[in-house]
Image (cartoon, rainbow, N blue to C red; front, side, top):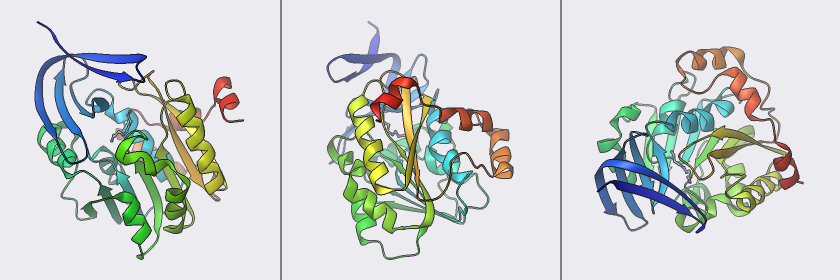
Length: 278
Ligand code: SPD
């Protein structure tokens, strides 16, 4: 009998992949964790039965949460990643030679342990000396942070329910702002404008009350509900269209999804999105 793994969203949307086999099933104090080998998307990670990443389309997500911010921020020496337990986001951050230090704060150590074992094709440089990997609550980390400010902060959380809910609210964005250099850049995953239209609009509007500008941008991620996904770029002074051409050209050479045309085009808003954000 064929084996399938489905994400059901809101009782109305279901996206399933046929499996070759299950590689890992477990439960941490925070969530269920699954790694499966699928017929069409390669190996994939699911948390609480929601798809998080797959070998087939992870580059869309990880290149696009990172490079719009890192090819436009004035300085990118110090980067903070909240979440991102599979390591795809730090892999892309560490491709920039100007990055001197990246701290990643992941809530659930089990997620990272399981990804290190089963998603080796992601090629995450876990031993890069520039990486400071910490396990704990990203909200508490920022609330208590007294160190040197970050040039860029990337929020690679799971969906805004359960343990990640606080990563999409005003008090958290106030902490992010406090820990960012003046004129620094933030990028966050901000859900689907189709499948989670209300969440998407609420999060973007909240970011707009916390930063001078917050511009959503869009990326096809077939693994996620509806396939249309958003990230939001927030800053008090940096324009996401003002690329550092040399940085972007270098990244583009080895990227699977990102390039300068995609960067610019991703910020175009479909008319229904403009209405949602009014
Ligand atoms: N519904 C999926 C939400 C995406 C959350 N982040 C995925 C982690 C990839 N590093």
